[in-house]
Image (spheres, rainbow, N blue to C red):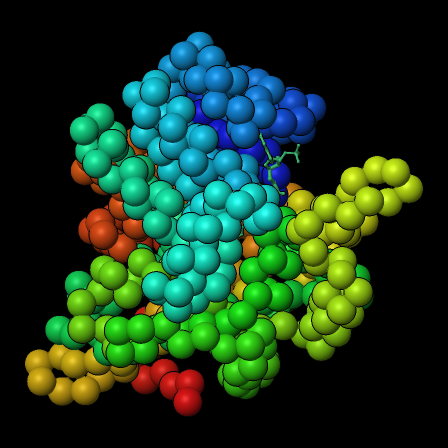
Length: 417
Ligand code: NDP
């Protein structure tokens, strides 16, 4: 099966490592903006890979370039692990060339000052009640086009979104008649030794974390100020950490796809140093996405900041500790109230030894490969646009165990108040 991977950053590197371990992929073309990174990865993986590996240079913002590449390579499936800004052009190219589409993050506009985009965004903020720059409406709008073309678009197969949504589908299938509450807890207990660095793309990470928080309750969104809701939780394998409520994209799809759910929240742990730096950078305008004129040249502050920060793909060697990411569910089974949690613990140094990347790239790249493999092999083969929780979770859960992200079920978890 021919796979085209777009992007060659931290997440892509792990996903491609893992694709090379899965015989379903016989030919893989790695295409990105900077071809030297693709060539370096091919050089590293070729001696042990069974799949034939090639590279290409592509600007995924340019539809015609994407179509030309896909016409030449003729992929069965495309894995988009570039940035959320490119989701729509890559989906369009897949439709034009008859390829399935897979990604790990929903569409986000790069230029949030574009008046046409802004008008749609402001209408959505009013109608839906949350102000994040990203939402699923843009990609769900392709449902009919993918159905008619007989192609699958699988959205959000990273860890969160991705594995956490599959955990939810698995809990729904095997443990509950009705799920009433879902708390998604993302704990990174790793330490890279820098005063400030982000563990995935800095621009996407800082835009997400500095935005308003929100959660879903009784059929509507409740929005909070950034970092307004804080809790402490004792994570298996990590210990006690402070975590903060964030808006996160899987809340939107789970609210749509999990019947009876009354509340969905997402919490992420942050250390004091990270929060203090982020606050300071925000206060001085370094997180702004609007260009400013500097010595006669236009620069976008957050892009300039990205250039100064450590590349997340370079953190692997120096990051120690573990992640613990998963979900806590409450609901009803056979007329009785019950609670349950499902989570994975991943060790940064183990991830580094295997792939050269830290656990955040690892926990995203492994499920990116799993979702892609399930689409590519036809195990998940409905035509249309789907979130991962809409398919049978069992084969995905088996592959998590097989490919390095084993999970644990706890039937008496401590709940978050
Ligand atoms: P990186 O910044 O490390 O890598 C992004 C890659 O995309 C780079 O190789 C970059 O090329 C390439 N790229 C960017 N723009 C273009 C373009 N216009 N055309 C072609 N290639 C382009 O990001 P990460 O690996 O950290 O993240 C990748 C994706 O994974 C993001 O969408 C992120 O949101 C998502 N993610 C999802 C998670 C989940 O759990 N669901 C968790 C973490 C991340 P260049 O080298 O030239 O910059």
